[in-house]
Amino acid sequence: MTNNVTPQDSNDRGRIILILGDQLSHDLSSLQQGDRQKDRLLMAEVTEEASYVPHHKKKLAFVFSAMRHFADELSADGWALRYIRLEDPDNSGSLIGELERALEQTPATEVLITEPGEYRLKEALTNWSGPAKLTMLEDSRFLASHEMFRNWVEGRKQLRMEYFYREMRRKTGLLMQGDDPEGGKWNYDSENRKPAQNDMFMPKPVHTDPDKITQGVLALVEQRFSSNFGQLTPFWFAVTRKEALAALDHFVDEALPLFGDYQDAMLTGEPFLYHSVLAQYINIGLLGPLEVCLRAERAYYEGRAPLNAVEGFIRQIIGWREYMRGIYWLNMPGYTSMNFLGATRDLPEFYWSGRTDMACMAAAISQTRDEAYAHHIQRLMVTGNFAMLAGVDPHQVHEWYLAVYADAYEWVEAPNVIGMRQFADGGFLGSKPYAASGNYINKMSDYCANCAYDVKQKTGPKACPFTPLYWDFLIRNREKLSRNPRLMQPYRTWDRMSSDKQEAYLSSARKVLNSL
Image (tube, rainbow, N blue to C red; front, side, top):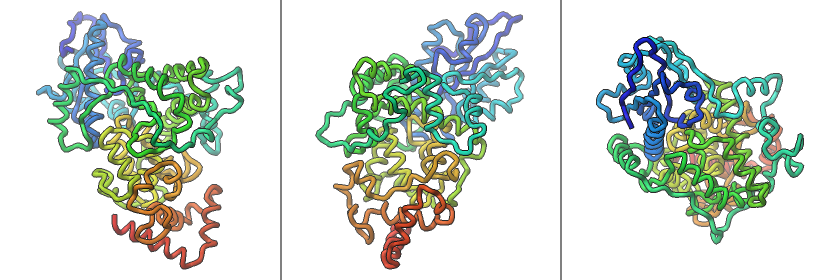
């Protein structure tokens, strides 16, 4: 890695190409338009990006190490590169500051950048009035451009991911036979809800041993971010494209065949089950979303993975992932401040410590602390569900999710949390709040078997807190939710209860909330 820049002819100063920490792709639009003979690259590790939320230690180490490895690849590929490490004594602490320092030392007429994924950074760069013209290119690594998503939205009364997903299937040709979906159905989700058993063989994600660069980063993170959330070691993430491709190969060969069946399952002591654990590699640029989907599709056509697994996996990437990005840019700024239900409770302390008698919450949070990872049902139906039922301020929930997961970037995290999980956007993204009692967790996991609470008890001190909180959530938000067609049945059930039973639920819920 080098901090030096190849000298430029004084009459042809070229451009500076700024590459961000989640843009580690050789086919990045700005690199594709760059000229190795004239242009200079700038990459910088800065305190501002490392600390705008208290990022998990593993995420910081992953990003810094992946950046440093990518910088070495770029230098070896013939690019003139200026790389600023976090520990460099002259580091200004911000990307804007490092851009201005670079321009002072090696002037350029233009700064070229691929659009940042997060609104706050795009705004800062767009409003920058420095000594060079700034040109921002769209991020072509995504399959749906901003224009495509806006065109899809136009004229629709309701936005639903399923219909967007079908458009993406047609656009990409993935799992398509002409104009028809493979197998005659668009969605095989009904086949993907089996609870897992603890005697099943479950492959572990590929573990990569830290090399010298990563070891140096681990020491840096431990020194500079010792008070941040999470366990730093053992550190096993891939930090290069080669390593990420090995992780993709392993998932397709070993886990994809059963991914579909058990993608909603939760099991004590099994944080990964059959999940890919590839999202952090895709979101940072080490893997491309289309190449990942094509690998999964090939496994289906070669008879190595069933359709329900491959379709479910592809839907997460070209469906949810692209849809979340579209929703984010359609609603920013302001989306992360939405609070349709008026929730104001502070995030409970145990979200940071994992110290709670609720076995499901303790499992999901402890796993998050140790691995910077939890799969989508743990996020959706355990930690996120509890926060919504308890009336926690959605902005605090959003910042927690953004901080604790290695794959979390605001463009994908905020719509999942603000819209889908907390219903803070009032139904713009999803058709109903994903509220569930302890019965759902008991059905999809083995957590309840060893919990201090009894999932079969509906009220009282030993009752599973999720169950009285579920009813309390519906009743305190009745004015806003009772006309939702998908919630009419629960409200009818409540109205048929005796007044004594209703009061028992609400009294139990009050005790849970007061204990927080």
